[in-house]
Length: 159
Image (cartoon, rainbow, N blue to C red; front, side, top):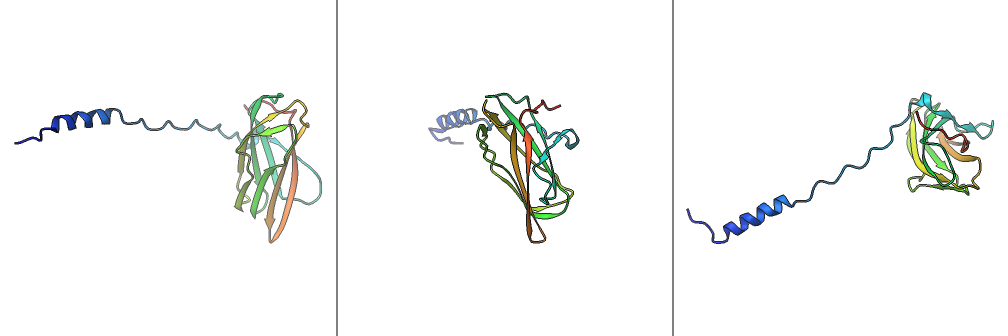
């Protein structure tokens, strides 16, 4: 059996390359587990007029303090089936919101569904005491919206 004169060098290079192969990328850090709906606090509805038929609950990952980022977990529960459910934070001076705060839109909202939205926020010393959240949804061709208020002073650790 004849061998190529450079076969030994090729085998050495192949072995070296396989031992230097890049390690698989590390898995992204696990997201915080979603809190149980019953453990979350109901958000305050901004007015009594007819609005989006949804309930909003929230939970902070820690105590809200000026300059300290915390995670805010939201759960929106439609009471009826609808379309184009949209959940968005209103721009609020004194509250910096993380990059993942783009509005959440759900094409078909199911009355049995729980739609979760989480993001990081940091409160400045001059921030208002409440964070407005706008939820809108189409039902039978009509668009309804509600404004909810999440008290920033009531932030408490998740259990």
